[in-house]
Figure 1 (cartoon, helix red, strand yellow):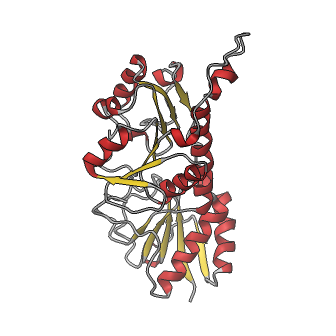
Figure 2 (cartoon, rainbow, N blue to C red):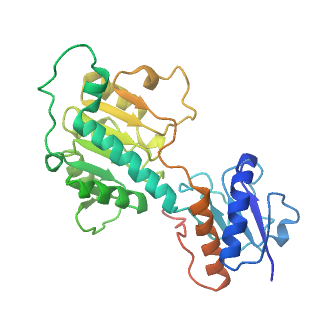
Figure 3 (cartoon, helix red, strand yellow):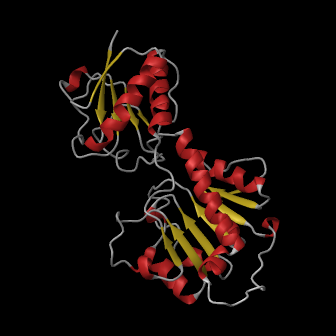
Length: 312
């Protein structure tokens, strides 16, 4: 049987994803008619999805067996009341590798104080700016999903003590795991660097507010490649102005692209990167999509199925 698969994503994505999906389906033995053109929604078996204005009502897709997201975050779709089909988020091995590289690179940058020497080309011999050993620098990993665990493992391999926090309790080898509000406060009070990799839900929005930023050791560093609204922008700017937070490296923002007049651009203690930490990689993500379709057709459990109550 030939499956009808609708590619519902921004038009600019089709030239890259179309060939990789076709190849991935062939490798998985899936006979598929793949198209970015909708046709009759009642005949669609699966939707490969990224947020776009062409699809906001899933009601007509009466035969659709699953919506397979190309994005790790599903906050733009998970609350859609018309979405009754199973929803799977993207956990892409290529994206995980990219995130590990970004997080490890920026943690090392701040740990080693590299900016002091890269930017301080003024003839001053700053011999007193030597860093401690990694094992003396606790790093908080806020969010212990696939990305958080992979980044924690990389940092642990460099001997950083990793203090992990998640909304529900976890047990991860080599990571000191905490959960709940008391656990968050305990982690932040010790973390000299905090990495934010939680999903965006109503429970994590503005997680890093003035109260929680004040818990961190003075001069601590924030690295946020997760979601922009995890941080209260005004509270972060105030903490940076006072020196409570020594630096913030931010890859994600409430409004993207970040408006040119936003204070983050000009603040001397902020590094802005333009949402480049970890894009979905078509060559690896399409294999995840193909595997989930194979599983659905074989009546096997879907990978990365979203829990609608938790929002991820």
